[in-house]
Image (tube, rainbow, N blue to C red; front, side, top):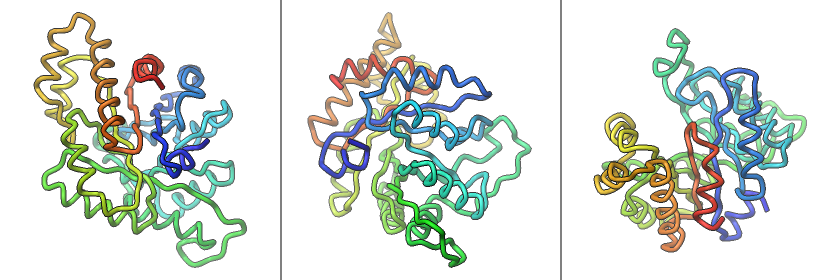
Length: 290
């Protein structure tokens, strides 16, 4: 059962994020993928995350598909104009990749090639509109396609946001543009998901709660200060400070949160983002009984 079928049948979906390598050695990417094969519904491949040069999301998605896993290809508007975005979407469809996550993208100034010229011709909503247009058999200029792609479109949302109403408005725009599922920014406070759940009851959409296992109290404090939309409560930071094995404690905290989300029916699944510690994902899956 694929991601779309799992979500639309009412199942609790589990996806995991893998970062393509900076270089041509894909050994670790493939090994991490094999370790979760059959245990997750899809694998999300980041698109030059943090504006850092890497193997592309499309290239990594093809590798993951060759290993027998279902990929979710990310695509941002930072590096591509409308021709390149349409071409990459058609390329994905041509090799059987259907799950697409549309993002605007971080500015190049945050990456490792700061002199790069940003494009941003299309933002996340425009990318969704573009994919929807292609699915209708035409490109953005109205020219007919020889073969029509089929996509399952996703986007992002940030539950810890004030005022949250602005995020709901963005969600509504993205749904109108074609989004069928959303991945959230990492959450650590169950109340954030409860609030999002209550405020999206009128929306016909599936939501995957973002989960980033913490590795230390310092990591939590850094994200609180520097990553917009992430809030780690003090009681969780204290748990990490008091723990002898901080990585294991971080996984335990993540597992408890996942179980709370699932048992409380606060989302339609979870998206695990291990960020450099992808080898720990199988252990987290074990702890959650997946």
